[in-house]
Image (tube, rainbow over all chains, first blue to last red; front, side, top):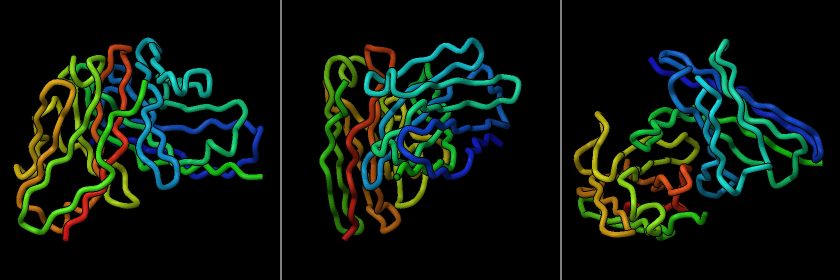
Length: 119
Length: 110
């Protein structure tokens, strides 16, 4: 059974750094693209970017390029989403998701990680 | 890249049909068949309903169907049921080798 299990909710202050994780199991982690989707409170889904763990090829939405870093560690089948300096506007639910690149769709989603940034 | 354009809300009575549109550009919806639709009930992760414009994953009722014409994709739900009430999002591959979502449509079953 394919599973994506995300790290728990975080409460941080503006300016702090953060790295959240997404562990994949039940499939070949190295040979499937995995990405991140943001959902701000009461708002829609926003595609942030994806990574191919096999060779770390990474694609970012122009809206998120330079704002976050997506990475993956093949040895532990885990993808990461990282901020160097959080802003209040980063408060959102973040979903990791397996993206079937050739077919264009997301077939599995993590349970979501709620990030709250507040002074 | 801008979000794909969806109507903020649609509604229909139980048993009726509704169609949700998703308008993009020649750089996304108009050029690729990698258009998918997701259902998101409140407080839950999204669920894939349609992929590659018109294909249904196993387990999705055949009441859900998808199509595309030019720069606009559509999701049609026939025989509306109360359980269909949710937010729906379209998504498309883009010429920048990235993906983009629509703004989302809230479906209300009257």
